[in-house]
Length: 176
Image (cartoon, rainbow, N blue to C red):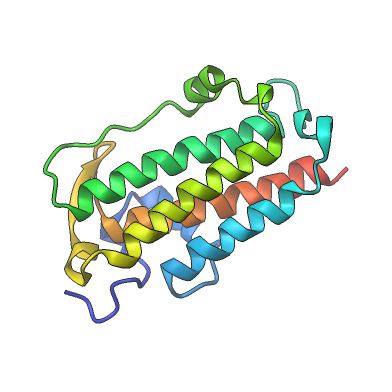
C-alpha cells in the first residue's frame, strides 16, 4: 500500500503513451485534477453558444458537440474500468473505438449544455467512487486494452484525457 494513494502513477502502471498526457496536469492529487478539469469543461463550453457548438475546425473532424459527447462516453468507460479494478475483478477490459462511438451517439442532435451536464454527472459519479475506495485499491491492477494498468493510472488518465481535449477546444476551435 502506498503512503499517498492518489499520487501520479509510475511508468509501469500504465501504457507508455499515457505518460505524455499526464504531463499536461499540474495537480499533485488525482481528485483535484479530476475536479478542476471538470469545472474547466463547463466554463470553456459556455463560449460556444447555439449553433457555434456544431463547428468543426476541419473537414472530417468532430464538432464541439461530438467532442463533448466523446468525453461523456470516455468517462463512462473510465468509470467502468475504475470500478472493475477497485472491486478486484480479474476480467480483461476491452478498449473502445472512439470514432464508432461518436458516430453512433449522434451528439449533434443534442444541445451542448445537455452534453456538458451529462459529462458532469458522470464525472461526479466517478469522483464519488474514488473518494470511497480503500487505499489498497489504488494499487490494484487489471488488463485494460491489452495493458496491465492500476486503478490510479485509470483515474489519472481520465483527468489527463479531459485536459488534452480542453486544449484541443482552446487551440483548434476557439483560435482563428
